[in-house]
Length: 490
Image (tube, rainbow, N blue to C red; front, side, top):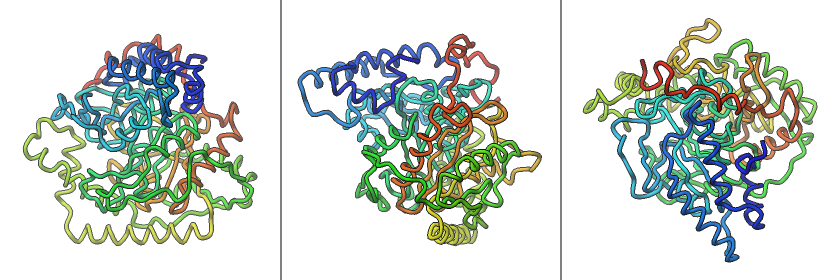
């Protein structure tokens, strides 16, 4: 792959700054890649071609005038369809908002645009982000670039699939129950959930809750760090927003041999397939000699499943109860099921969940007093067909709920600690395997530095390096929209 769209964000930005790459040339390369492979995976669902071309022309003119350039100047990016974009349809994957065209950018989008990014289009998401399989009744399903019949996960599945196919160098994502990390794992790219409050979210209905977070997604760690440096920052409207504890741009190198590593295949209780456990053991064994110490250990996550289920339901109730009551025909099965579940909880359930979350947080704090970094699988299963709305079982073990299979990531969500999914080769099914790297409170820079060191150690490695999909085969594939069940939930 030698097209401009295959360049990393940092490389493309450097070439633009040196007048060796035109922003218009980069944009046209991205558009050509989208035209060639997007039909096979349905990652981009709305494009602003005219607006992007005008922005690229203006970006090129600024370069030629010798103006000061932003950190992302001239870089086309994809925006998850949960973030509003001025003048570009923003549907949240819901028929209720099928024709919604915002007048203003959401804060994260505004920050990216102010840094010179070119908003090329929107990437697919499940309805209101509720679900770890990217399907909706507005734009249909998103397929996995390594096998379009399989899920790209969710809810940032469109962004992950677009990045895996090198349609753009950067995309936005968001994460509650792993909505950013899971797609990164399934599609072989990098997604980071920053620590609580690092990326301000002023329109969050429950401002004191850190469960939901925006985050950067890219194809290498340095690009993700660059994007985080732009997205991060306080905002007085968000009561938990706070600055990064340490700079991430430029990202300083780190000596892994100075760090104490802990590793867990399941946090002692998370559902996980035997094949994923085996894949993780192989990677933990390869990493262990690089650290000062490596031991099997994990925080106590007792009560985490019930706590996350209840606290997540509180947010769902606030955001979507009225929609289900007033427009049930326009709500999908996940939205309806989530609201109905939320209606069944009591104040006592919420109080117990908040107490359990605090115990889990303190367990993480105690754990990181003894260990510097923790690794685990990002997801406990290999990608399954996107027609399966959610896994009902994992290796024959029935799931407690439709989100139980996401326990590996939502325990970390409850703690508020930073975490990143790093691609490390393929699993036994030939699908990408994601390694979850988790750091201490305030350890966003540490997580990125560790991830960069691991990435560098295995760059180009046939077994543990970042896998790439077969773009030629995708270009010859039938459009995903022709698949049975593509649009909706049948």
